[in-house]
View (cartoon, rainbow, N blue to C red):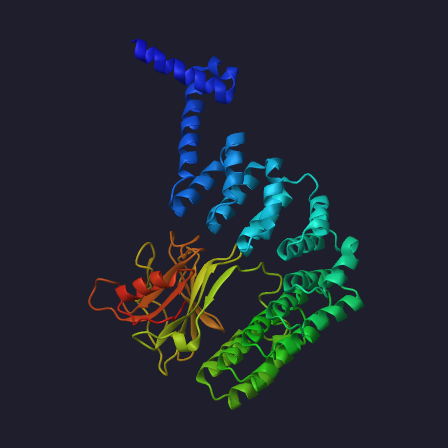
Length: 487
């Protein structure tokens, strides 16, 4: 009996020490707080674990406590040897919102990992009472190039006009990281002299700076100015820069973009970059005016991969006045599959695109192409991820003509298949809608028949957002040769 009383007294005293004298007024509340205190102690112990994964889980859990002890522990974790621990410690400090962590976040701006520096910058924005003043002070006092670059980037977002002279001076800085941030600032200022300085940075010796210029061009108000800077970058000596700029060019709002892509199709030596240009041209402003140029490019093209990409672009281009995508919200995730990577065991019907993360109000979909020379009946075929998605195509699906596309809409409407001027539409039954494919990662395969019935033949397989090891494992299960197809 004395032992029980002694333990109860220990619990009460611990609650008073941690939560104050008011905690003794209500026994249930005291017990709950005591459990939280024990959980906090266990979490703090996990911070000392050798396993980095345990320490990461600990700093993430500490974000749910707002006590001074948890804040102090998280501040200490920002000096952990593992990048992920530092990153999530900053994120938890941001969640708590204690200004005591401000100096620690500022120190993390010098971290060698960009992900940690970004978390540090976001934490400063969240917990500082005067973010602009804080960034102004960091910009004036920091000696580390990463910290200065981050500060310059943030003041550019908040008030670029106030820091115009600093931005223009930084465009000539010796440190590449500073010049990258200056490119963003020059685009935000947008004056004639700033556009000229941005154009000069497009010839910078550092490839990272040239990529930063490509990103900055997307902020320019005049699309023609952006195209004038991106056009020579699309012919850059570095293949990586060329690919980056060819991809970014499609986001520029200008009728001149298509002409640049046609020029790339005519002059680019790398097959993959010509194919990328062909894929992007179908989505640019005024794409219909480039149909004749695309047909000419298809005629002279020697690569089957690029010809297929051109044909796809011609398929996507709308006739003038019938742009179905005008004003539509942005789709966040589409997995496109290059022509050379589409086939598996069968080569007649293949998966060409998977829209796994559509804009709000739009259904997910999977696009199929009949790549054979004959019509194909897909009735009874199966689309599956082998886990939660098992869709058997209805028997009444019309035959898919050679070279035609079919789109499986995961809208749960159970409508009968229909044929439009562009494609065959197949709708899913109720229950197969709303994040069926998986925003963060997934895979899907097309079979000739339901798994487990007879000997179905796999036609195509696509994966997105998964690690190479996971993709390899899924492919092995389906008897597909190891490759990078569909990743």
